[in-house]
Image (cartoon, rainbow, N blue to C red; front, side, top):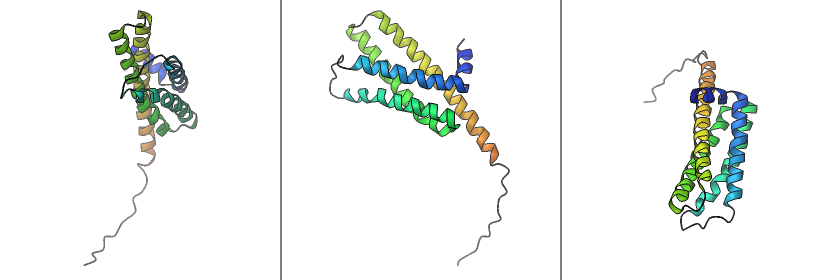
Length: 150
């Protein structure tokens, strides 16, 4: 089941939908975050991750459209940060118990989806990198003459 999801997410349409879904999830999280948490010292940095995820989701879509695998990397990094933020929020839900259980279950599902999407994008990045690497294998190497300066 998970391998089927990952194989569907590896297509161009799957990666575009991943970028859209991750940006929408970050926007929903950012909207929910607005004024609902009392941040203690050191946790304020977590509110900068969702806008980063939105911007990197757009970069991921641009990378698919332009067929440039280098634009996948920012989304992969921001996705890991966003998964961390979701895990942090899930721990806060468990510890403080202020939000009902549906939020906890939905956080688990979202984290699982983003993890599968990250794996799918990473596999597609590897495929694109290896395909580009083959283009330069047959380039002739010019003879270089080493001159002793001494």
